[in-house]
Length: 299
Image 1: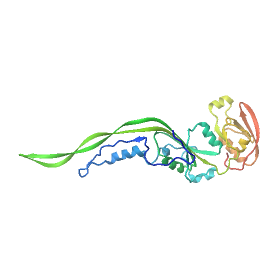
Image 2 (image 1 turned 60 degrees about the vertical axis):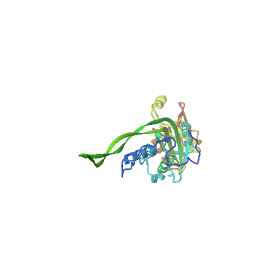
Image 3 (image 1 turned 30 degrees about the vertical axis):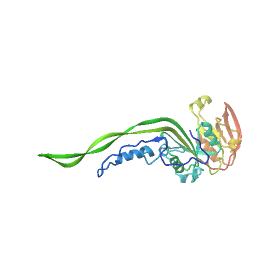
Image 4 (image 1 turned 135 degrees about the vertical axis):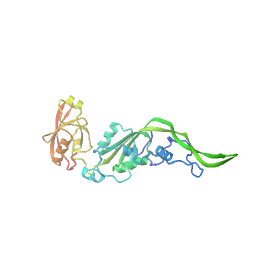
């Protein structure tokens, strides 16, 4: 692994020292001189830079706000900041606890990139972070295995063709005979994962981040309605009311909560009001009075 800092990792577009490409034979003939053919040049560029216009960070990106991702111009309507500066890239192990900590501190996940392959540059990650308007990126790189092999390529060796007549041989033309050679390569492959975060324009009106009940939740509770709490954003009404992760919210302002959309609508309709919130903790039903904030984000 490597160490990171809150100021971000150094950006580099060059090949990583873990990628080893030994020298190879020049191929082709122009004016009697061997040169690298375009196909082999493309192969070399592919091995050292990723071989495509989009980085793996861009190709593997999955938005947490739906696919395709919203445009940056839509972020304001979603109460999100489309960050325009240089993002901070922070080395991380991406444990669930660390991700929860960022959510509690008020960060919003925009999505993540995840892939396995040669080490992508920090410059490619910075470009993707800017593309999605992220202010902070948590980055994990775990060494997997060393991949090695050999790539075939063809050279063309010049051969003179002669015509024989009597006792003399006359050179007629030069032919080129193909010969196959192999270019060895070796590089380390990594499991690479990045989660992109931005922050809200206004604090949440409620602050409990919900998820759908899964099968185990419904079996344990004995019914299908409600939303489980992932966590609460610090210093929000839900946090101050003592709602905890894994509590199940079943009713807000007298309205039964069947899923995250119901919770969002209840918060939107009662923004700025004091409402009763019913939730389950360990099978025990509890009720708390909560004064919602004025934000119209429905969170």
